[in-house]
Length: 194
Image (tube, rainbow, N blue to C red; front, side):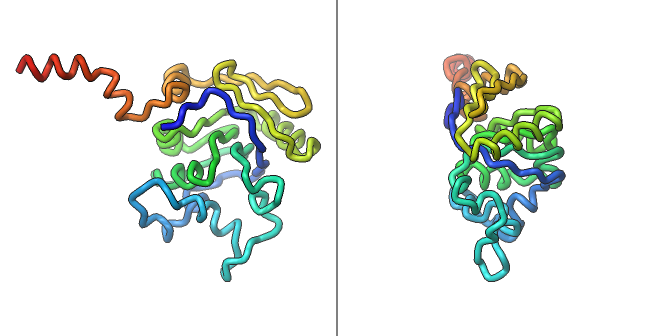
């Protein structure tokens, strides 16, 4: 899993509440057993028409945000089913961080396991950040997990809190297997004793 210490990148404002996992990636595209290749179907129904052409108005289709690594979303992002593919689609597209007032519980666990940083901020702060990003013409912002700060292009700094356990595993880049392997010596000693 890729470490997350700090990321300076374009942020895409996504002021949609209740974005469920089916909006993030429809079930039709969840046949993959690997984490790669799903990014092209991220927000499929929002990004593309039925004939496959891009919807010009969708933020990730706009030139400034085609390579966004940060989403500034709205409340209840990632609600719905327990599809880990939703997180895989976001990370495969290149999204490293989602900022929103709230997230679906299962989505949050899947995000942590796959290196996607979720930052919870009050609705008013998310709205102000989205406005700031647009006024700055999508200039890169910096998300610093070590300092727990978001630095907007305007110079504004937003402090945030992340669960200390989540923060540590994201900064160390440890997935479930990586966390287990930190105890390899103890596991080997136990196996040798039985």
